[in-house]
Length: 342
Image 1 (cartoon, rainbow, N blue to C red):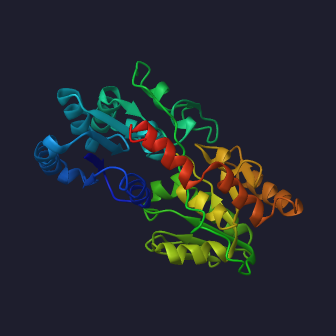
Image 2 (image 1 turned 90 degrees about the vertical axis):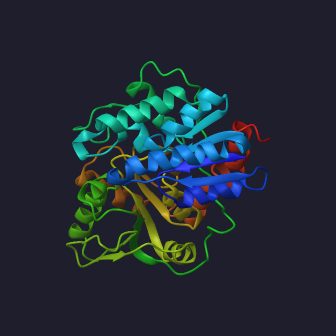
């Protein structure tokens, strides 16, 4: 049985369970993101891992952090494989915007211990391994695991996310011209809003009152612009319809691993506009627009360039990119092989 630990349950977790469940028993153990609950959850997790130890074949963790310390330790002590899927914040140090595990002393120690003592690291993007970050000039350029843990010896294998393109599809609906959508959770916290690029989106909305913007994921987020519609979390069916009613998808993150919503939106035919961070340029390829520096004027001029290049403003081109390079099957096959389940 695989023990799968994570700090919070997400759609990414559900997809992994869907991939692994048919070929191996798997038990999910959610941890906590609350600092006040940490001591309790460490004790709880220790006894959970001890209880399931006789049936455990290996450990799998989503992100490195507090929740991966004990699985890495159990793996070492009892000779069981422990794999950590690096997803973004666990490979980043950006105190300038209040983001990344490595900006906090004890979280950094937990993250470093986990990555050094696990058996295998599976980042979702090459940029999380090592990158020369240039998007926001006020942020340190040295990001990624090998820059932040120079003596890291654990094997690393990049496995990008994959998408169910039978579900995430173009429904052929009419899309409102100059309509933009972006999906992110936790954006009512100012630091998180900046990480997800909402400051740039608000500047666009301010400069173009005739354009419409939809921000999905946190109903508590407050926009100063009347042409910005804020919606809470949506279920997959609601998201499918929302993607299909918008012309463009915005992923203007200051930092990112592999954004799932970007891939979903592209599979649904949204033309992507993203920042040059993490896997975003790799996902978009030649099907949309890449902003190489955090600059509102540059973004504005690039969008107008995109409007004039009619071949790029095509739902079919964006969808084909996901079908070709980021299918559910590709990720499933690679993940199962890395976990020795294939």
